[in-house]
Structures are given as C-alpha cells and as structure tokens.
Length: 178
Image 1 (cartoon, rainbow, N blue to C red):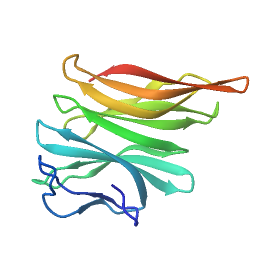
Image 2 (image 1 turned 90 degrees about the vertical axis):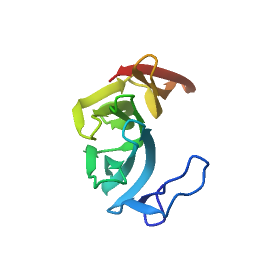
Image 3 (image 1 turned 120 degrees about the vertical axis):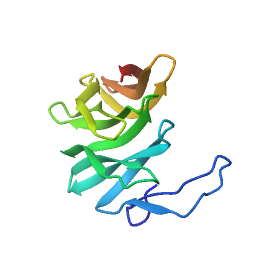
C-alpha cells in the first residue's frame, strides 16, 4: 500500500491471514501510488509495482522484488512518460513477470495498454509490448493473470468507445506468451 507520506509499504501475512511481522518500507523516494503485488512460488518472493510522479505531469513505473533472504533493487520499468497509470503484475510458473499499465497516447489523445516482461530475477526482457491500441478508443483499467494450463498471461482492460455523443464500455482481453 502507499501511506500518507506516499511511501510504498508492505507487511508479510501468514496463510491464515494474520500479520507475520511489522510493516516495512519498500520505496520512500518521491510521490508514489497505485501499488500492485504478485507472488512467485518458485522462489517464494513477491514483486511489487507502482507509479511514481517524477515531476509535474511526468511519471515512471517501477518494480521491486521483495525477498526476505537478500537485498534487492528497484528496477525502473517505464520512465518519464507524459501520463502512466494503473500498473498491474502477474508472475508465470517459471518466474517470468509481465507488468501492464495505461499510457497516454498524445498524438490521438487517448489511452493504450502496454506491458513489459521481466525475467525471474527482475531484469527487463526485451522492449515495451503494445497490448491494446484501438484508436480512437480508450483502453484503461488493465487486469492481468497467469494461466498455468495454457502457459500464457491474460491481460484484460476496459475499452471505451465514444461515437456521436454516446459512450459504450466493453471488456476486452489478449493472451501474451512468456
């Protein structure tokens, strides 16, 4: 979660839902919000992603692998774009991570959903992936899950279509491989 000081914080929780220790700060630099977390059962770690206000209307998305056994570092996933929002994360069976988020496309003044893969260690894999870009519609509010049976991620989003003063909302989705 992010607290009143805009720090990203965490706390371990036991399987029965009880707290397993004290709160700890994950990231305490700048103005941070919109955290999301995923668990990696392969190495019993968590990866947290969040949005940071860099300056004015510039944002970045960062990730942090939380491992109680070792020191880890923050990885900037996307940086200093005009508007970024709503980062979400899922982790595959082999530890590959997919982070998806909204990005403002300034040429057509609408939002797209893009993503970035990270390896099991948290390092970037390749470049940014365009997941949804349906000009002139807005693609927002991404959600993501890992399907271990099919071996791929599913990213869903809200597609907003406005025509002649009418606005319609749809849920769309796309499968993304590891």
